[in-house]
Image 1: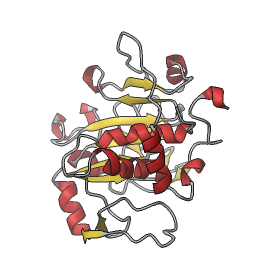
Image 2 (image 1 turned 60 degrees about the horizontal axis):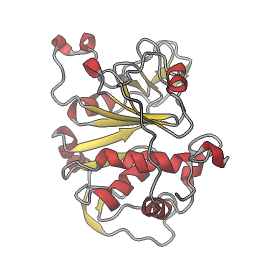
Image 3 (image 1 turned 135 degrees about the vertical axis):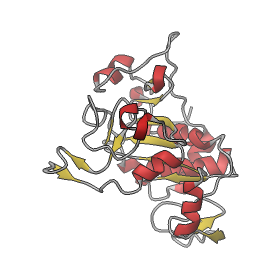
Length: 264
Protein backbone atom coordinates (compact mmCIF):
# COMPACT_ATOMS: atom_id res chain seq x y z
CA UNK A 1 0.00 0.00 0.00
CA UNK A 2 1.48 3.34 -1.06
CA UNK A 3 1.43 6.15 1.48
CA UNK A 4 -1.41 8.53 0.84
CA UNK A 5 -3.37 11.25 2.57
CA UNK A 6 -6.91 11.10 3.89
CA UNK A 7 -7.97 13.50 1.16
CA UNK A 8 -6.56 11.20 -1.52
CA UNK A 9 -8.42 8.26 0.01
CA UNK A 10 -11.65 10.28 -0.16
CA UNK A 11 -11.04 11.37 -3.76
CA UNK A 12 -10.48 7.77 -4.84
CA UNK A 13 -13.66 6.60 -3.12
CA UNK A 14 -15.67 9.56 -4.39
CA UNK A 15 -14.74 8.75 -7.97
CA UNK A 16 -16.76 5.53 -7.72
CA UNK A 17 -19.89 7.67 -7.41
CA UNK A 18 -19.80 8.18 -11.20
CA UNK A 19 -18.45 4.76 -12.18
CA UNK A 20 -21.73 3.32 -13.47
CA UNK A 21 -23.40 6.48 -14.80
CA UNK A 22 -24.45 6.73 -18.47
CA UNK A 23 -23.12 9.44 -20.79
CA UNK A 24 -23.92 12.17 -18.28
CA UNK A 25 -22.31 15.42 -17.26
CA UNK A 26 -20.15 14.80 -14.20
CA UNK A 27 -19.94 17.96 -12.11
CA UNK A 28 -17.70 18.22 -9.06
CA UNK A 29 -18.08 21.43 -7.06
CA UNK A 30 -14.98 22.40 -5.00
CA UNK A 31 -11.59 20.68 -5.45
CA UNK A 32 -12.19 17.23 -3.97
CA UNK A 33 -15.37 16.49 -5.97
CA UNK A 34 -13.80 17.95 -9.11
CA UNK A 35 -10.73 15.73 -8.76
CA UNK A 36 -12.99 12.75 -8.09
CA UNK A 37 -14.97 13.45 -11.28
CA UNK A 38 -11.74 13.70 -13.24
CA UNK A 39 -10.49 10.43 -11.77
CA UNK A 40 -13.77 8.74 -12.66
CA UNK A 41 -13.56 9.98 -16.25
CA UNK A 42 -9.93 8.87 -16.57
CA UNK A 43 -10.11 5.38 -15.05
CA UNK A 44 -13.68 4.18 -14.66
CA UNK A 45 -16.16 5.79 -17.00
CA UNK A 46 -14.86 7.37 -20.22
CA UNK A 47 -18.47 8.00 -21.28
CA UNK A 48 -18.79 10.86 -18.83
CA UNK A 49 -19.04 14.40 -20.14
CA UNK A 50 -16.73 16.83 -18.41
CA UNK A 51 -16.02 20.52 -18.90
CA UNK A 52 -12.85 22.58 -18.83
CA UNK A 53 -14.31 24.58 -15.92
CA UNK A 54 -15.29 27.39 -18.29
CA UNK A 55 -17.49 26.83 -21.33
CA UNK A 56 -16.13 23.86 -23.29
CA UNK A 57 -16.52 20.10 -23.11
CA UNK A 58 -13.04 18.65 -22.72
CA UNK A 59 -11.83 15.24 -23.87
CA UNK A 60 -9.71 14.83 -20.74
CA UNK A 61 -10.04 16.32 -17.25
CA UNK A 62 -8.33 19.69 -16.87
CA UNK A 63 -5.87 19.96 -13.94
CA UNK A 64 -6.63 22.29 -11.03
CA UNK A 65 -4.96 25.66 -10.78
CA UNK A 66 -2.62 27.32 -13.29
CA UNK A 67 -2.48 25.24 -16.44
CA UNK A 68 1.26 25.68 -17.01
CA UNK A 69 1.00 25.07 -20.72
CA UNK A 70 -1.66 22.35 -20.53
CA UNK A 71 -3.98 22.71 -23.52
CA UNK A 72 -7.25 20.79 -23.21
CA UNK A 73 -8.58 18.93 -26.22
CA UNK A 74 -11.95 20.55 -26.85
CA UNK A 75 -14.79 18.31 -28.02
CA UNK A 76 -17.69 20.76 -27.96
CA UNK A 77 -19.13 24.03 -26.79
CA UNK A 78 -20.73 24.05 -23.33
CA UNK A 79 -22.78 27.25 -23.02
CA UNK A 80 -25.49 27.57 -20.37
CA UNK A 81 -28.15 26.27 -22.76
CA UNK A 82 -26.40 22.95 -23.37
CA UNK A 83 -25.56 22.61 -19.69
CA UNK A 84 -29.18 23.13 -18.69
CA UNK A 85 -30.40 20.77 -21.39
CA UNK A 86 -28.40 18.07 -19.61
CA UNK A 87 -29.41 19.25 -16.16
CA UNK A 88 -33.16 19.55 -16.75
CA UNK A 89 -33.32 16.19 -18.50
CA UNK A 90 -31.59 14.30 -15.69
CA UNK A 91 -28.32 13.78 -17.57
CA UNK A 92 -26.08 15.12 -14.83
CA UNK A 93 -24.69 13.84 -11.55
CA UNK A 94 -23.28 16.55 -9.31
CA UNK A 95 -21.20 16.21 -6.17
CA UNK A 96 -21.55 19.37 -4.11
CA UNK A 97 -20.20 20.70 -0.82
CA UNK A 98 -22.95 22.32 1.26
CA UNK A 99 -22.40 23.73 4.74
CA UNK A 100 -25.28 21.83 6.39
CA UNK A 101 -27.25 18.65 5.82
CA UNK A 102 -30.05 17.09 7.87
CA UNK A 103 -31.50 13.62 8.31
CA UNK A 104 -33.63 14.08 5.19
CA UNK A 105 -30.73 15.01 2.92
CA UNK A 106 -31.93 18.61 2.76
CA UNK A 107 -28.90 20.87 2.42
CA UNK A 108 -28.05 24.53 3.01
CA UNK A 109 -25.57 26.87 1.31
CA UNK A 110 -27.45 30.09 2.00
CA UNK A 111 -27.37 31.33 5.60
CA UNK A 112 -26.43 30.23 9.10
CA UNK A 113 -29.13 31.10 11.60
CA UNK A 114 -32.46 32.77 10.95
CA UNK A 115 -32.90 33.88 7.36
CA UNK A 116 -34.14 37.35 8.34
CA UNK A 117 -31.24 37.99 10.71
CA UNK A 118 -28.57 35.41 9.90
CA UNK A 119 -25.36 34.90 11.82
CA UNK A 120 -23.64 34.49 8.47
CA UNK A 121 -24.79 35.08 4.89
CA UNK A 122 -23.28 32.64 2.40
CA UNK A 123 -23.92 31.98 -1.30
CA UNK A 124 -27.70 32.00 -1.46
CA UNK A 125 -29.63 28.97 -2.68
CA UNK A 126 -28.31 29.40 -6.25
CA UNK A 127 -29.01 26.29 -8.36
CA UNK A 128 -29.62 23.88 -5.50
CA UNK A 129 -33.46 23.82 -5.63
CA UNK A 130 -33.65 22.95 -9.31
CA UNK A 131 -30.64 20.65 -9.28
CA UNK A 132 -32.11 18.56 -6.49
CA UNK A 133 -35.30 17.70 -8.38
CA UNK A 134 -33.78 17.19 -11.83
CA UNK A 135 -30.72 14.93 -11.45
CA UNK A 136 -28.77 12.81 -8.94
CA UNK A 137 -26.64 14.54 -6.31
CA UNK A 138 -23.87 13.43 -3.96
CA UNK A 139 -22.11 15.38 -1.22
CA UNK A 140 -18.70 16.10 0.30
CA UNK A 141 -18.04 17.51 3.78
CA UNK A 142 -14.40 18.11 4.81
CA UNK A 143 -15.36 18.40 8.51
CA UNK A 144 -17.90 15.94 9.88
CA UNK A 145 -19.45 17.54 12.97
CA UNK A 146 -22.82 18.57 14.39
CA UNK A 147 -22.56 22.02 12.82
CA UNK A 148 -22.65 20.33 9.42
CA UNK A 149 -24.83 17.29 10.25
CA UNK A 150 -27.50 19.17 12.13
CA UNK A 151 -30.24 18.13 14.50
CA UNK A 152 -33.68 18.93 13.13
CA UNK A 153 -33.75 20.71 9.77
CA UNK A 154 -31.01 22.75 8.16
CA UNK A 155 -31.24 26.50 8.84
CA UNK A 156 -32.46 27.19 5.30
CA UNK A 157 -33.61 24.44 2.94
CA UNK A 158 -31.84 24.97 -0.39
CA UNK A 159 -32.09 21.44 -1.76
CA UNK A 160 -35.02 19.06 -1.68
CA UNK A 161 -34.58 15.89 0.35
CA UNK A 162 -36.60 12.92 1.53
CA UNK A 163 -38.97 15.03 3.64
CA UNK A 164 -42.58 14.61 2.43
CA UNK A 165 -43.66 17.56 4.56
CA UNK A 166 -41.84 19.86 2.12
CA UNK A 167 -42.91 18.17 -1.12
CA UNK A 168 -45.57 20.18 -2.98
CA UNK A 169 -48.82 18.31 -2.51
CA UNK A 170 -46.91 15.61 -0.63
CA UNK A 171 -45.66 14.15 -3.94
CA UNK A 172 -42.02 13.17 -4.29
CA UNK A 173 -40.23 15.17 -7.01
CA UNK A 174 -39.85 12.94 -10.06
CA UNK A 175 -36.05 12.97 -10.29
CA UNK A 176 -35.12 13.41 -6.63
CA UNK A 177 -32.18 11.04 -6.09
CA UNK A 178 -29.56 11.54 -3.38
CA UNK A 179 -26.63 9.15 -3.53
CA UNK A 180 -23.38 9.32 -1.56
CA UNK A 181 -22.07 11.44 1.32
CA UNK A 182 -18.29 11.53 1.80
CA UNK A 183 -16.69 13.12 4.85
CA UNK A 184 -13.37 13.13 6.68
CA UNK A 185 -14.73 10.29 8.85
CA UNK A 186 -16.72 7.96 6.63
CA UNK A 187 -18.84 7.23 3.57
CA UNK A 188 -22.64 7.20 3.85
CA UNK A 189 -25.63 6.89 1.56
CA UNK A 190 -29.41 7.06 1.79
CA UNK A 191 -29.99 3.32 1.86
CA UNK A 192 -31.55 3.04 5.31
CA UNK A 193 -35.27 2.56 5.99
CA UNK A 194 -37.27 5.36 4.40
CA UNK A 195 -34.09 6.77 2.80
CA UNK A 196 -32.43 7.18 6.20
CA UNK A 197 -28.76 8.12 6.03
CA UNK A 198 -26.79 4.88 6.33
CA UNK A 199 -23.15 4.20 7.12
CA UNK A 200 -21.35 2.53 4.19
CA UNK A 201 -17.70 2.50 5.31
CA UNK A 202 -15.43 3.94 7.98
CA UNK A 203 -12.11 5.55 7.17
CA UNK A 204 -9.09 3.90 8.83
CA UNK A 205 -8.96 4.50 12.59
CA UNK A 206 -12.53 5.84 12.81
CA UNK A 207 -15.23 4.12 14.88
CA UNK A 208 -18.99 4.15 14.43
CA UNK A 209 -19.27 5.87 17.81
CA UNK A 210 -17.08 8.74 16.59
CA UNK A 211 -19.28 9.21 13.54
CA UNK A 212 -22.48 9.10 15.60
CA UNK A 213 -21.11 11.48 18.24
CA UNK A 214 -20.40 14.02 15.50
CA UNK A 215 -23.83 13.73 13.87
CA UNK A 216 -26.96 15.51 15.06
CA UNK A 217 -29.30 12.64 14.14
CA UNK A 218 -29.20 8.83 14.28
CA UNK A 219 -27.12 7.09 11.60
CA UNK A 220 -28.51 3.81 10.31
CA UNK A 221 -26.07 0.91 10.46
CA UNK A 222 -26.62 -2.44 8.76
CA UNK A 223 -25.81 -5.57 10.70
CA UNK A 224 -22.68 -7.59 10.11
CA UNK A 225 -20.08 -4.91 10.65
CA UNK A 226 -18.95 -1.90 8.65
CA UNK A 227 -16.09 -2.21 6.15
CA UNK A 228 -13.09 0.09 6.04
CA UNK A 229 -12.91 2.57 3.18
CA UNK A 230 -10.42 1.07 0.70
CA UNK A 231 -7.06 2.71 0.14
CA UNK A 232 -6.38 4.32 -3.23
CA UNK A 233 -4.39 2.28 -5.73
CA UNK A 234 -1.05 3.37 -7.15
CA UNK A 235 -2.80 4.11 -10.44
CA UNK A 236 -5.39 6.29 -8.73
CA UNK A 237 -2.73 8.21 -6.85
CA UNK A 238 -0.80 8.84 -10.06
CA UNK A 239 -3.91 10.23 -11.79
CA UNK A 240 -4.80 12.39 -8.78
CA UNK A 241 -1.27 13.85 -8.76
CA UNK A 242 -1.50 14.59 -12.46
CA UNK A 243 -4.88 16.30 -12.08
CA UNK A 244 -3.66 18.35 -9.10
CA UNK A 245 -0.07 19.35 -9.89
CA UNK A 246 -0.16 22.25 -7.41
CA UNK A 247 -1.33 20.02 -4.51
CA UNK A 248 -4.52 21.97 -3.85
CA UNK A 249 -5.87 18.80 -2.22
CA UNK A 250 -3.44 19.24 0.68
CA UNK A 251 -5.35 22.36 1.80
CA UNK A 252 -8.84 20.84 2.02
CA UNK A 253 -8.87 18.92 5.31
CA UNK A 254 -7.31 20.63 8.30
CA UNK A 255 -3.74 19.47 8.84
CA UNK A 256 -3.78 17.29 5.70
CA UNK A 257 -3.82 14.09 7.79
CA UNK A 258 -2.41 10.80 6.49
CA UNK A 259 -4.66 8.12 5.13
CA UNK A 260 -3.90 5.87 8.10
CA UNK A 261 -3.50 7.26 11.62
CA UNK A 262 -0.40 5.12 12.32
CA UNK A 263 1.42 7.05 9.59
CA UNK A 264 1.06 10.29 11.55
